[in-house]
Image (cartoon, rainbow, N blue to C red; front, side, top):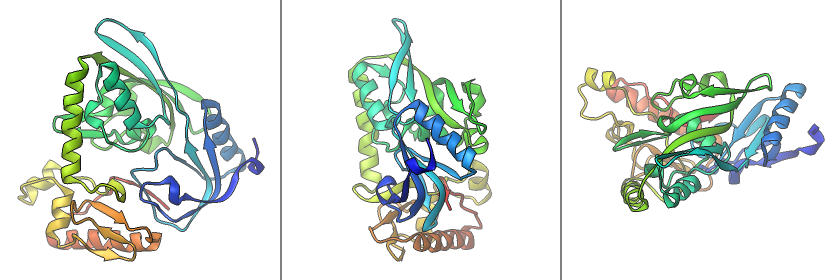
Length: 304
């Protein structure tokens, strides 16, 4: 593989759920494990920046032009590697769509990620961010057993769950910049009807409380810590509450607007430019800081 094999100046509009209008210097679609390894090694050889996108959710592009190689991860594969009467070990590739996996495990009677029905993105992104459901509290990382990673030098290594240091909206991958190739999850065997009930409950809640059918990257900012909540004598940890009470619902800059349904969602109405988003983010953070003396931190990954 050489630079000549890559697409030039690909518009990322259709590759992110926020529909960012940004141009990638080089673009490549990885469909296999080896594709991911080869394209990463090429980036090292050519000394180019490297950005990997799965479903393109939970990211926000803040620049009109992305230097280096942007990779669309379509490595989609899964297999059962061990099972008993009570549980199963399932190996899932990093490009596997999270919602597709949720639906399939529900139909197979495998308990573990049913509350994540309706979530966009891929398994790679879900592990990277330690995707969660809050009632009951359930993290993707809770069900991971081990994984195979591509290191910063282009080698592969197998790691255990403990390696990830999972926490709220966090895994060690955010610091090491290693790339997930495959993850192995442990699921319990359960009645399909029970899983369907749980998943539909979660999906119904999302539909009632979050904007649907719009261009968004999901919840944009992290909820505040319990310590911040206590220090400011607040009734909730919700970042959406802080944004709402700062008078920002419906606030618009260019083609980007703060959702009137849930203030922690930023919507691209289709014409939003990266520069518009930068200005809106600054406004939101400044207003919340002014009213509550709290510094909001992004939950989404910012790409410059």
